[in-house]
Length: 228
Image (tube, rainbow, N blue to C red; front, side, top):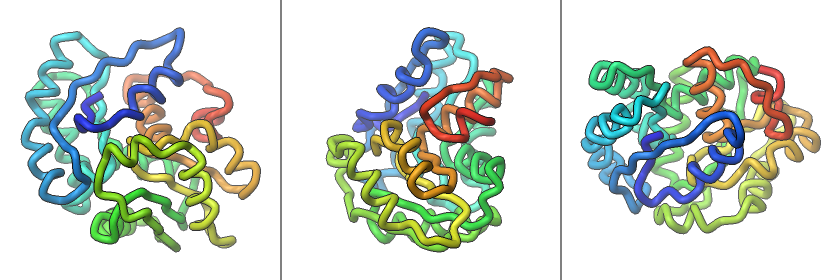
C-alpha cells in the first residue's frame, strides 16, 4: 500500500484482514490535512513510494487514499493506476476505483455516503461517484481536516454516521476514508440496515485481491468480502 503519512488506520485494518495468509507492506507520502492542495502535493510523491514497494517484490500496489484518488474527477483513479503500473511493472489499484468496482459488484445503483471530510471534499466525492454512474442519495461529513484526528476516532463514530446518512430507498452505504476505522462495525450495520455496507478499506482490500486473482472468503467484514 501507498498511504498518506498521517494514516494510522489502514495498515492496522489490512493486517487484521490478511492475518495468517498474506503480508502487508507500506510506503508513505507526506500529508497531514485533507485538503485539495495537500492531496495534489502528496500525489507528486506517489511514484517514488511505488518504486520503494517494487523493491520488495510485492504482488499488487494499492494507492490507499480515497479523496486523493478522486479529487480530479472521473478517470483520476485510472490515471494513477496506469502511472504506477508503468513505473513499476506491478499491478496497481486505487481506493477510489476499488469503491466503484465494489458498489457495482454489489449492484448498488443508489448509495448513501458517510465521511469524515469537509463539504469541499464531499462535493468532489459526490461528483466522482455520480460521474461513474452511481446516484448519491445523501452524503454527510464530519467536517474534519486534520487527518490525525480522523485516525483517533473510534469505530463508533463511523457506525453513528452511517446510520445518520441512511435513507430507506438506498441500495447500500459507503463509509469513506482509509483513515476512518470501520471494520468492527460493518457487519452490524448490514444486519441493522438491511443493505450492503462497504468502507474504503474493505473495498481496497477486496479489489487488491481481485486484481491478482486471489479468491478468499473473509467472514465478519460485510457481504463484499464474504460473498464476492
